[in-house]
Length: 304
Image (cartoon, rainbow, N blue to C red; front, side):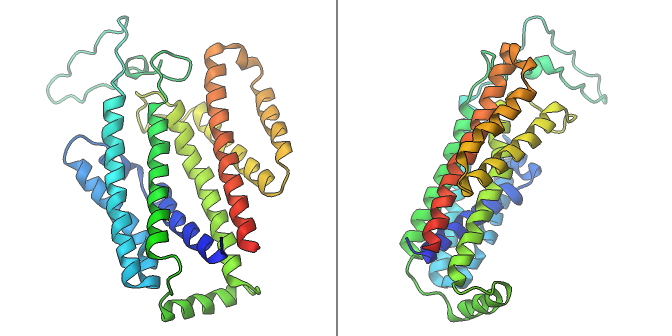
């Protein structure tokens, strides 16, 4: 696979990752998942962001790039909407434990009091019967579907096609000044692949592990606790794994996991925490390993 093809695919994935994990705010995500008219407004805003991130393809490839932008943006919206509907059907609300009475309705003009954690699914994390991996599976399926559409559409419409001369001249002029290398295309391919890997493991991994571990009743805006520290440790863990794989030192990954386990050793006596810990760690390391191996292969092919 030539470095031009790798650069094309890597740029398409970068546009998607920026739209989904960098520019999509919590407010947009919550609006998309709403059950009223806000859902379509939120989806339209997100599709607009996706289209904006794909504008360089229209500038580079003209009419073909514009067609790519329209197809990917529209299908992106359809995939996102499908995931939301499937998530809503697959994950039923957590039943209220019999020991927790329902809160009385608030008086007129008085704001409703928030539900206690026990009533909104605090017993819904790994290690409990109510927990389900379905949201995380749908998240992964959603991302895989987006990647497939990006790659197939790019292969059909853009691969091997000449770019607009003005665009090529601009990229060469800027790239030559910023990257004084013999092969600009190969250097750009490596940079974009590394950016993909970084966003996927910092932001994408954060959401994947969070969705996998968080109770279905988790309310956004709640006070940060140990989970925030654990999420930060997970990001660092994934970045270390990526660096080790790219450096050809994958065998050292065991020491990273061992060090993390040692720090939690006493807590592992708690079966609930042990299952929670194992699910999060395995998901985090698997994502880092898989993405790093793909990135290493892409970098190797781009430089060859």
